[in-house]
Image 1 (spheres, rainbow, N blue to C red):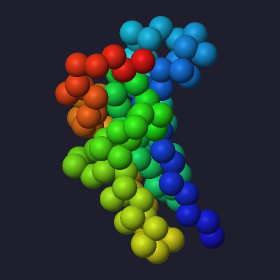
Image 2: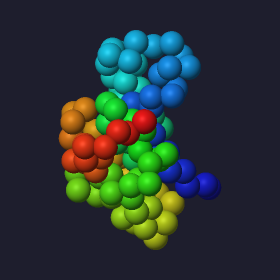
Image 3: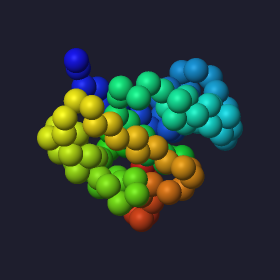
Image 4: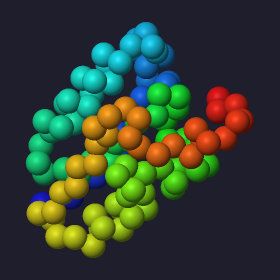
Length: 109
């Protein structure tokens, strides 16, 4: 049996543009979040939300967290646990994950 860890930003700026979705609309992200909640219990999920940018393409990707759990800590836990263990860290609120760039005054794009 394989272990899967899904990394998904609830707001992926590039994907939203390619899909021609209104960037001010939360409909797409709400549906994505709901689908992740209902996804198979055989996968682990780390899905932070930041309405300004996706987290994996930024140099500060390791500082994002959900419920004070960073991606590095989640990966470490996920790799050490048995196959039957599954994490589902999905933002309950679109402002609950920590985005380090929200503290900066620099241009993010």
